[in-house]
Amino acid sequence: MTATGPSLRELIAAPHPDHAPLPSAAAVEAGVREMRGVPYGDVEGGRPLELDLWLPGGDRPGPVPLVLFVHGGAWRRGRRDDMGLRTRGWAPGPFARLAAAGFAVACADYRLSGEATFPAPLDDLRAALRWLTLRAAELGIDPGRAVVWGESAGGHLASLLALTHTAPALAGAVIWYAPSDLTAARGRFTPEDAGTPEAALLGAAPATVPERARAASPLAAVRAGVPPFLVVHGEADSMVARSHGESLAAALDKAGTPVELWTVPGADHGWYGLSDARVEEIFLRSLGFVRTVTG
Image: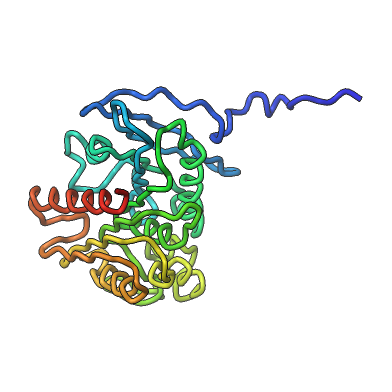
């Protein structure tokens, strides 16, 4: 009996991200190499998931640490290569700066709340880490020295990833002005309201799906043995109450996790209201934390 080969459908399909050739890296500012739009995951019935990569230039003695960046946008919008309002005009940009400092940076897509509900976006970030681990030798990265860094809704997902991902465990987490609790009223957020971004993430008002809201709350996922955290939150945040950051840091400290909490006076969401020098200080302190936990 003659074995049948691949079907025409299989032959014409794009290569699976696990073994598709990597695109050529383009040299950009500060000697950094950049790859844009690299597929990392296929979602049945959905768009391909992609990430952008910034890689250090020059010869390196070995694989470099990794920063996985997670963008904000209330879980329903946003761009993977956007670190937030106050860094958009930087030249070199923040990710090129991280790469120039010796880190590989991956900025990953995840499904937004108009496409799928929780835990889909968290599953996507796990898939990105799996792909980065699979292709680590080709990329010259060390997935055993990976830090997740997120802002706003991306910080929420970054917190959950750091608290729940174990293979391999992350080296640390940088969390900028992120929600940590979807179960209780804080600031503008009310769990009974079905019109909030949190409700769109969960697929229903959080109060009506308490188990799902708890599963999506980093505060409820804190346990012993998780990676170190740097939690930075504006004291004047009008969109995500600073108590989110304070409660998360307190819970981590109680669990014995190394955690730094920095509440920034005069800072609203997205570092609105701060001077350029103050935003630079926050970025450099975050970079210093990444150096420490991956060193």
